[in-house]
Length: 182
Image (tube, rainbow, N blue to C red):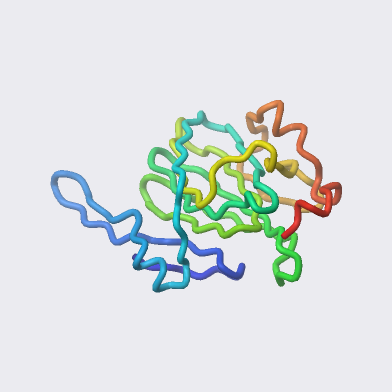
């Protein structure tokens, strides 16, 4: 695995070594020892899998406090544009966003530490998105940021995404209560 550090502390893009042949391909999608050697020591306790149509935007989501989650995300069918927003007070990238294209073809993964809001939009006709979490889902800790917050100016590559009623109700970053920051 090639682990690419981003400008955001702890946030990494993981590029697996892929072994293709006439039958298809093989790659190691997770290796705790390799990640730990790179300083990404996390014990994952829950796997999630979503399927979404083109233009579907999920996010921006996070869990607050002791229920915050580190995630390892990837797209196993189709293509998505994956976005994170840094909510860590004192971070040099506090309140900034970063986006990366994840696809079944490029097989890249995004390692997202606690303290980030996360979301993605589907670029292909259909996409399946999988993620590992180091803490279980906790509905009482669930929070979010409005996907098109004018202060964030996220450059989403879809003009009119399909958004759930719940995600349309998320507050802007400036309106988040103090307990939403890390």
